Image (tube, rainbow over all chains, first blue to last red; front, side, top):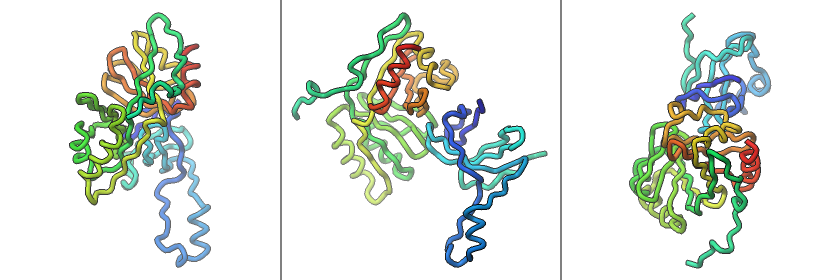
Length: 94
Length: 180
């Protein structure tokens, strides 16, 4: 089982308490009617789906209930860092 | 105030049988209020009589009232039964114009107490957390899961826990505890 650090509870908690929330940092246009069908369709349906490092949303559903973001490697399932919603994607020291 | 306790049905009427090392008891009826809001948390705590703790997963007790941290802007307030309205009015009066919500959930969930040196082991039949005293000290409280049911788990003593569970899930939780 994955142990995921919740940035709000400030501790590692078992994966069972969390729900996956899709890719992070996908920004909805402030005025969707002005951006056109192409851009709207991209916002709705197209995700980066990378092999490797992926910024994604998780929700601590059966805990504090908050959404937060996480950098996870989609190949190894390793979680590098979790950070609060609204914070910019952190740069990983390679 | 009419005494409704005689006619009240509780899902905790048949508790799991006590086994060596752990005994069960139903917590008495109590007022439960869910407070949401960040700006007014300090004033709300003052009005309630118990500060709302800011340390994650911690609790505070003063007299017969308690506040339990559930999230960064979410607390469970416990007070004696029949004080629900007084608490709601006191908090509303202390927070004029400040966005907040106080929701009465007194009858949504029930309290189940576990006492004894094997209480943590019984809980770990369904709770995926480390319940050692070091990882889960006295006073720590958190929402978590017990098998498939969401619970609020509060450590009230070194070998004493209080489980708050939605009343319709109580038979499920107790059935698993009985065979744990």
